[in-house]
Length: 129
Image (cartoon, rainbow, N blue to C red; front, side, top):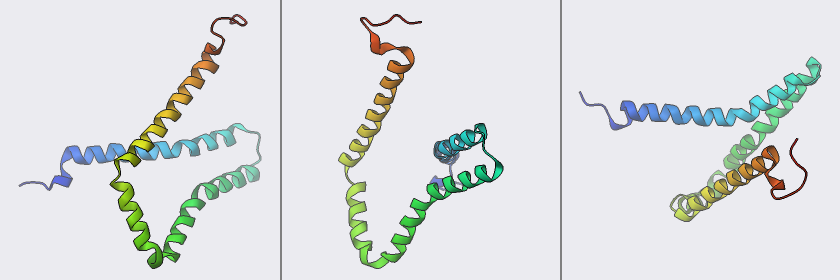
């Protein structure tokens, strides 16, 4: 018996790994906020109110986009579909996004080297402690 292409084991494993990675990366800011709250000197009502406010702030943009899409359903569907087609078929758009991500990663790495390893004082300055 032959399995459909979309249900082959490597495909399912790849899908599971990509979903796990995406979910983990989007959960990191939430874990960071919870750890800050847990490490702070907050009372239970303060802690709960800050956690609720964080969740509202994290979810509100998505909810707003859904409501705008529902309201503008028919009037803007054709225009939005044209824009999405243009964006998805454009190699330049993907290269731009990858370039921006690469720049941000390189900038973060350079800042890490300068701040944590003191590489900003090469060639003079005060000696390391």
